[in-house]
Amino acid sequence: MRFSEFQSFPREAKNLIIYYTISSPLLITWTVFPIYLFMLRFNVENVGILYTVSSFFAALATAVIGRLLDKRITARNAIILLECFGMVSNFVFSKAETASDIILGETIERAGLTFSVAFQVYEKDAYPEDIREKVYAYHMALPHIATIISYLIIGILLTYVFTSIVAYRFL
Image (cartoon, rainbow, N blue to C red; front, side):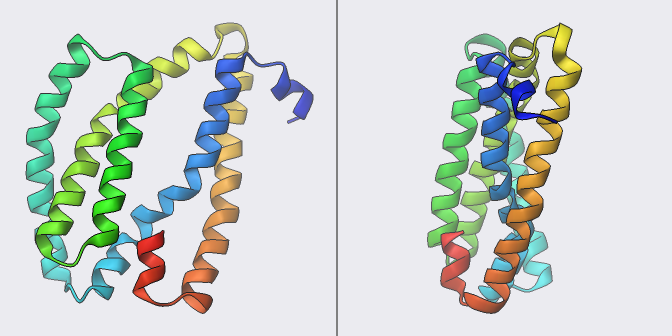
């Protein structure tokens, strides 16, 4: 992997790889979310019920969103919508105190994940076929490197420095 090789990729390919690299550290929220729920005094049974109920509502939302994807939404706009749904759900989670808050946030997040199918379409358009194998090497490596480094740092910070629930809400 060389910087000059990365620079030779088309702009859309570089932008998508950079997007994946910047956004991948934020995926730690999926890992620490159950810990956050336990800090809110939910027990294992309640967390299971919350995930089940939110999955049901998300399935209903997925049916509606799936129809939109079939008819009117481009891949680029679907990715933007996915990020918007994620932003709204993270805001709901940061203010969450009750089970209904968690269900609302989970439903919004999972409904937004329906738009993730757009990534494959966008990648096919952004990564030229003749160099796709090289581009995918960067596509896989750079986000994983960012994830390894950031998870380590965030884990240390949440474990030893910022141990209150407020830190989880900022995450």
